[in-house]
Length: 60
Image (cartoon, rainbow, N blue to C red; front, side):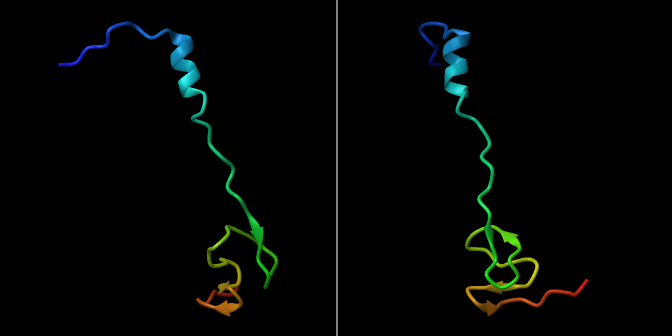
């Protein structure tokens, strides 16, 4: 089995792991109902995508 030649310090390990951040998802407003939605996805509030109704949404 391969074995590491030397021990990595905790600081070096921490520097590598420092970039494991979660990113906040990008949200855009829907052109139909102006609700916030993820880009390139069907709007959950009105069911429109690119100006066309793609799915029916139950009224509340």
